[in-house]
Image: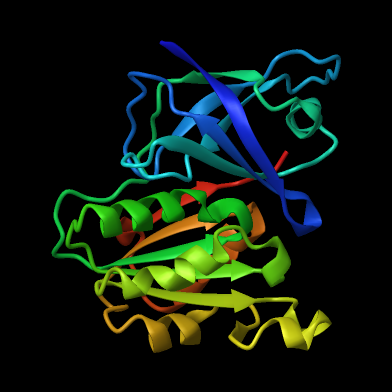
Length: 239
């Protein structure tokens, strides 16, 4: 089933990271962490990948609008997204995907996000906070610089609203402007996970980010003796 939603705002951050806010169509249902197929109108940009892509929904089901985040590029799809006017109607298909909060809350969760891979985790953390689901969550978020990090301030505030949520953010290029960032620096690694997730040995791990980051995280978790049965991965190729 197809739904249609109008573009409300488009906020462009550093390094061509962009957050899109859309109307939520009547009857559009999803679970926090899911994605949907997203189609934009033909504005004259064409390539062999077309104008339809899966995008994770960054908003909670309890919010009144839909949020999506992506990194713009020279593809026809992304060029259209960068230039389409506010009010443009976008087609959305029914949400799907297994990267969602489990029904049971007895297993702690560790979310490992890289770049725009934050989208499903922002949705899940927001929903867990708003709905008081009882999940114990540690969110690890690796980005390059604060200026290209969507939802940064909101995510840093969220633990004050949810005692079961811990957030650890690290910047890999904070040294380019030391005055910008006083938190963790460097790539997300096993020591950071152990230092900031007290239940790391029994946690279930969700990984979302670019392929290289996801591969590195799988290797890190393997070195920590985390069984594959407790790891879920979603790739964000960025094309």
